[in-house]
Length: 485
Image 1 (cartoon, rainbow, N blue to C red):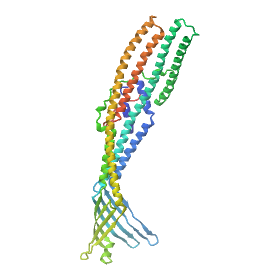
Image 2 (tube, rainbow, N blue to C red):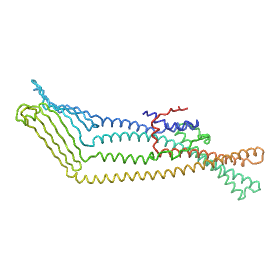
Image 3 (spheres, rainbow, N blue to C red):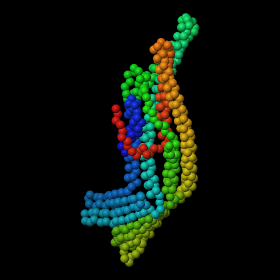
Image 4 (tube, rainbow, N blue to C red):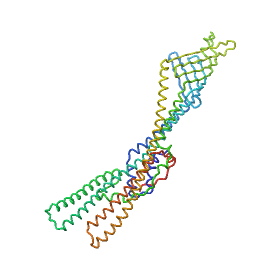
């Protein structure tokens, strides 16, 4: 899976219908994000770890020369090479070969050359291997999901920052509205003949000056925040007109229905269920017993001379088994070697026992801990399901508020737009004052900005709703991406 795809795919989905200026800002915001680059690198690392896990839990091959001893003076050399091939997926089936080799100036001798095969009759090795592979695949999937949600979260941060700028702009408009209203009142006071030294005149004059000061403060704050925002987006801002820097339109989007997602894909539920399943498999793989068997053939077995009381070595057929009782710490092995010597049939038996007494006490405690862990996992699933129900109610309520506000702002914007058009005509005809005309314009601008903020609220709502769920189907295809303009 290409890093470039993960770094670009998801955020461009939102750009396909975006206005040019908004696209440029959003593109730059993503390009300057170090967190997305970090998440992308983590995906690459997870891919490598998954490949490593497959190799580590695949066929195991070991080759060794053993200890090599030699003397330059006599030309004597001895070594014990060995090799083994293990297949964990096939009941830990293992093939092995070893030999003792001696060389001097006059001869080359081999003894105890053994060929063997071993297999687990009952153990959890295969299950443990499968669990290790599944955990590596899960780590990769979660890294991909984190990057996927990282793009959505980054987009949310962008629109939240943009919303903050619009809210600053709205403060300017509100302050302007207050300025024009107080200016109208001030004009009325002057028209009524109040002198400049009167308290009413001076009080209203101070209100106008205070409003004008507020407008200047909010403009300064907006310019400062736009400079920071522009830098984060990698674009130039000359600082001349903060209001014109903001996109005039926000492309409309359809609302995301929280019930359109499957409950089992709710991230907290899916995570809790997977944790319980993988841990249940892990507990089941920890078998109480492990039984294995082995068989082999040894050429020129030196042990054979001892057990037949003869100087010449012979071949032996070797059979053995082992039993491990994990909860008691008991481990026993048994084996028998049959010499291939015609009438000199005298098998050699081998037995061993080991015991770890404290395992008795630890096993009971570990069993109780496993029971507590399982209960905690079930509680986590139950809590996740309750959280899902709460999230559904919260998301639906948020969407209702956004849709209600959208309708209200749309109606108000239409009303104030018509009023602004009428007052502009009345002002041209000299029917109303400039302050009255400006007051109508700021009312229109106020609801225009509210409408834009509402559109951002819907985008933010959609993103937050989507990130509540796993959307793995989006990971399985690579859409064609537009180029930066």
